[in-house]
Amino acid sequence: MNPLHEPRRPAGLLGSAKAVAWAFLGIRRNRDYQDDLGRLNPLSVILVALVAVLAFVGGLIALVHWVVK
Image 1 (cartoon, one colour):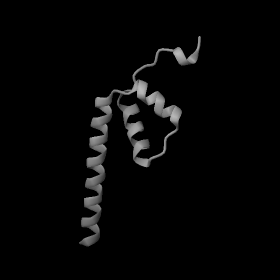
Image 2: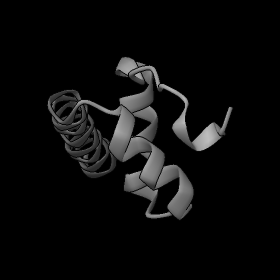
Image 3: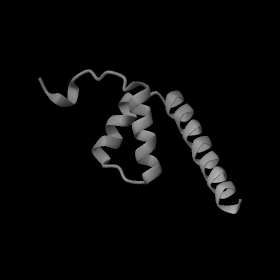
């Protein structure tokens, strides 16, 4: 069977977190990006990205407070 036509399982929350982490770093192979487009649920990616952004901003705020005090 041709591997391009195999049915793909949804990636789930861990796959979404992994894709968001790679997006934050700004490095991703095109083949992996294309795989993510077919496997990931856009709603889960948005939710994981929002949580990651809030954690990042919260971490920066905490770091600034720690350095200033």
